[in-house]
Image (cartoon, rainbow, N blue to C red; front, side):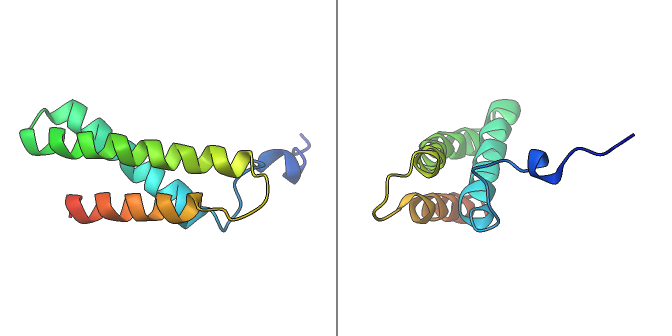
Length: 91
């Protein structure tokens, strides 16, 4: 059975440079949000509330990377900062 072409397996808007700045914070934010909905502890609920705002920043960064129109791109910086803040609060 022939394998599909490698360019079909790559998601077009994700490159290796966006992994630590967009994808990893987005992953952490989803995990904290799921943990807050699942455990129902007061601390986890507060962290999930913070994760929602961080999640919005990361989703904005993804949309900005999809619809880039030149100029300065701030999405990765803001996404990394929001994810770093959430990671600091969780740890």
